[in-house]
Image (tube, rainbow, N blue to C red):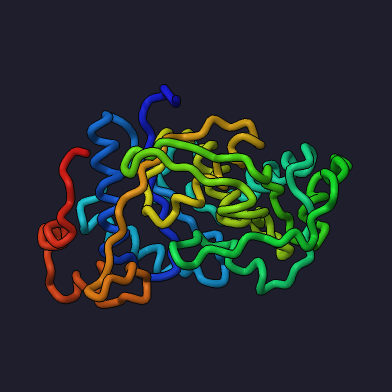
Length: 290
């Protein structure tokens, strides 16, 4: 159990306008930080250079302030654990990659770009990759790296984490209770680094949450399975994992999980329509202090 002073985080990606599903999760994160007398960190998860846009980054900060969200550390206000934009944290990810390679946790994978493209973004319910069939998995752990800086990244291959087949990964979520997933059955070997030199979502968030000393991760329930993967990375990298609190998802009128394509429910659109922050918070039926 993590006993450090409470540190929570908001970690939006500037790949579109934030919708009320984001707003609900972020508000819950803020309420939990306030209730614990802790710190709330804003991190700009802009690692996807193809989709991240400066306009969206500026809009997300404006919209979050408009809603009433306040943070004590972030790209707009600084702090002791910066930089707070993932696009500026490449050295942290490379160091973690080399540590995983040296300890034999990862292996090179030459599967097609299509096979690994989704590794950059956070997966969602219904969008999980199938269990990896082991096409490139070696019979034994790969040899230890030669220790040269950047060796793993310069190999021009994808790097995939070898999961311990058959091992149950268990944790108690602060919102939905006990969770149990079996490695090799519920999820397979997953990509941590792409051949274009970009760390995958699973690695980047673990590295950043550890470096920024986050003690509780508040996010949507569609990322429960990702938590199992990330707990394996925490262990492999010898980081102390945070607690987790996975919020119920906000859905549209047809019961579909909100995505950034739901422009009518984006905070930016609601603002332009004259909706007040109070009305948005009421629409989300937000809890006060969890």
